[in-house]
Amino acid sequence: MTVSPQKPLVIVTRKLPDSIEARLGELFETRLNVSDEPMSQSQLASAMREADVLVPTVTDRIDGRLLAQAGEKLRLIAQFGTGVDNIDVESALSRGITVTNTPSVLTEDTADMTMALILAVPRRIIEGSRYLRERAATWTGWSPTWMLGRRISGQKLGIIGMGRIGQAVARRASAFGLEIHYHNRHAVNEAVEKELGATYWENLEDMLGAMDIISVNCPHTPATYHLLNSQRLKRLKPGAFIVNTSRGEVIDENALARALEKGELAGAGLDVFENEPTINPRLLDLDNVVLLPHLGSATIEGRLEMGEKVLINIRTWMDGHKPPDRVIPAIL
Ligand code: 8YV
Image (cartoon, rainbow, N blue to C red):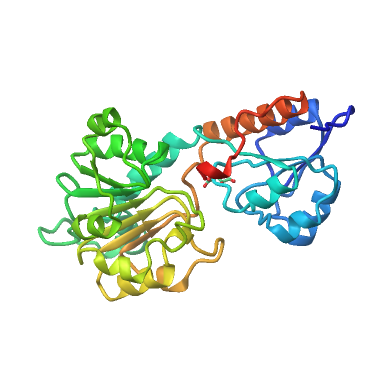
């Protein structure tokens, strides 16, 4: 590994917490993005021509074309985030560029947000709140049959992707009385399955047809792109709900909008979208959909811990060691 003897130039593509930026400045030569405006592809290309280390986020598309234009010096891409589907990791590695991410520190926050959506959609929390904000003056008070949602307890929750976040969701959901089911490439180990009271479904189609609520918690990879396509969405029960805090691309968003419009699904809670930051207008028109602006990991604590991981990854790399959070394609 060739690390220049002087401080490496670290270019950060978005505004990070002040204390993280201050520490980056102490340790490295840094170029920060004070305005927080996302970089264009040509700005990214020029950053990658100059930097030793790039610190991108989910909003930067680091594809093969961009990597082909990277400067000789670029040796580390230290993603501020866990998902790396915005980076062509194989291409980076083939050019000798190490890629790191920030796993684990977002698990509990993302699971909390998932649980919030699992509660919010069937119980119509956002719809009720919107009603009062917009029509408080016309509210006539409690009614025995008005704005009824669906009971959470006793429902079957099907988790797609039983990694760290999926398991953290299962723990929360089981405390709310949900029955835990999951689909994953492999069953998790028996002790974990037992602790979570979780049932493994090797066949996704079979699980979909038997669930009341689906939670998407797998990463977006070529294998999971449009995993929930229109055919699979059709397997769901008409009264089923879908929650997604992973990546929009895992669900065919147009097919989802169509199913929701036709009443083939009861509702959806979406924190992520297929073409962020563009939101499918069809989703905006639906009352049975809760939309959040990618807030899954948006806590102050989480962002500081992510920054800390970025610092550690860059620093270990700079010292000539293998950074702890290297992304290895086999486990993507
Ligand atoms: C991050 C996320 O905040 O880490 C992830 O994978 O989805 C987000 O919650 C974002 O990716 C920052 O790059």
